[in-house]
Image 1: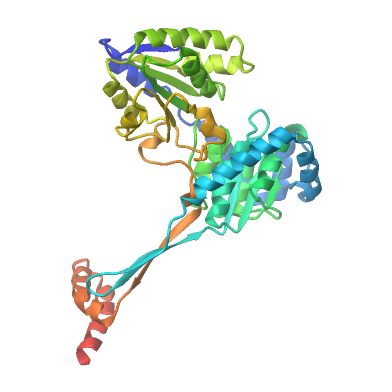
Image 2 (image 1 turned 90 degrees about the vertical axis):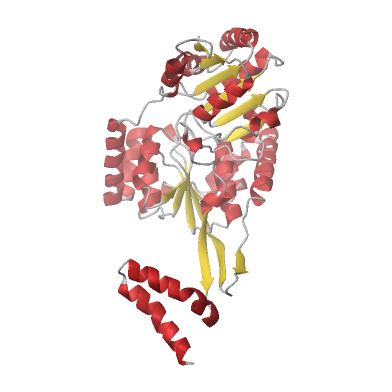
Length: 434
């Protein structure tokens, strides 16, 4: 059974702190292994990728076969059922609709002294998407990463997906086609991140890398940041459900297990002001675990990282939610909008009992690449903005420079940056000669 807590308990604060600190820190061994792989790829390019792919994925490649050919993609797409094709197309349509409306606008304004000030937005030239393969193969992640990049205007879009033993999910390749990915490479792990960051003879270096992955992928993304931009370093999935007594315990149990089945390290937490609902949800989880195909994963997650917290009232639930800063927050109460308005820290919020988080994973529209491990306190989920850069613009007239230039000259002198002040003074002197 998951951890059972109550804010009425004398030791609640210490027990809650222990729950927050359960997440494992990055392994030094994994960090070192990723660093070694990055060094190999930088030094030996395609040759290193080929050797590492054979070692880890049991797949023999050449430089010519690192990428899927158009014929291979066509063959894979032909194996998809009409129902799967329609579901992916619906997801792509809804994701594109949502992200189209995130595009910011250029702006130019004139202030009170006549200076023109503004900004403009431009996409990065090239982006690389990492998509997990093997047992964790998610075509939905292709859409969630690639569509915002295309909406932003990224010119070149490449994708890396590991194919252990040569196996690939055809839906991943169809999603790449739907999202207009230019090239799909059949490599994974830290070596794929290194290839996209530094380039090889075959794989071009990109400007931004996005997408989830295992611990080695996360460690590699940390290490290449600065050479390229990254979206985030994502950890195991999380959900926090805030529910009052007016809920179906089985629905809540399934919402919790939908995160638990991702990974043994995933975390699912229920916060409720109803002790009766807490008991009923615990019982429903135990029943549902007996029937799940991924029972061993979900059970390990629920036992090791899950929690049920009974609070005195929903205002306490808000306080706990902000401390947890969950990746996913479901609010199943009589007034979900009112409660959501009080929450400051959450990656994504799902309002009402009819809005399960699983909808957000696939067809809701908002992005499912979200901050984990309490990083929603300071970061946001993936969006069009992650593929854009903002450049500021400024234009002085003689009159506006005369108005604000002396202040700039004075500040430069205060900082003992003589040439700064002189560059302004030279122009002010020219004005005085008129």
